[in-house]
Image (cartoon, rainbow, N blue to C red; front, side):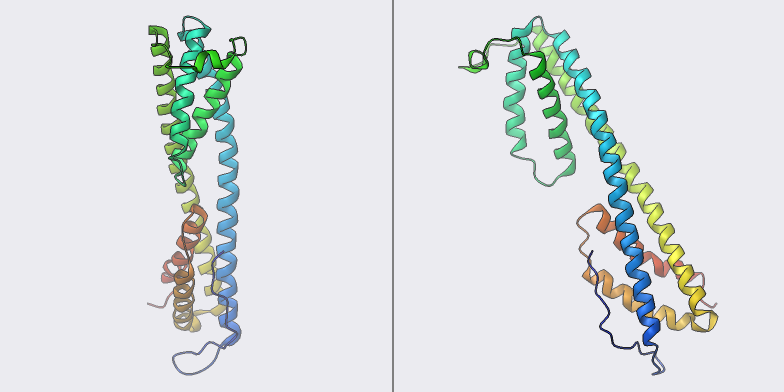
Length: 238
């Protein structure tokens, strides 16, 4: 977690008085919030990823079986398998940190592995892959279309799931930020609201400046950090 830890120096109010212990307490609250948000996001994302992997396994089995049914015989299916293998090998070279592309590659690899299992009665693969592969039959073309429909389904499912996860986690992060703002206000009371706002604003600025939101947990952590100030607005004196 990226955070700027307290220097140990007391906080100085605009009127010149010191509230060192209060500054440390505010910083601890903010660091605790960020840790809770990150842990929540990582756990939720990991759980959904496991579920999605199981869904991909079921889909890959179904699509491979459907592709085998599309083909006239195993020789045709072997040629389809060979073409897909070449295409997937080329695509993998272009997959870097893009999550959607990585999921796409994973889904296609699962289908290819399932086709391998269906082709265990085919003659040695070298006999299939040597030289230019034969032209596809109508059944082979149908199998490739089945495969492309599978790719579209996986992409749509991943986009929907990703959007759902981000929305749910953003709502939870805002809820945690609101709880933190309320807790800080209860600790400081009406007389301390202006000082709390002044000190918290500076702590938030420091944490935001140190943040590098390259992942979803880090982005949610930053969202929660900024949102504490918004939650504090309703408690400030009119």
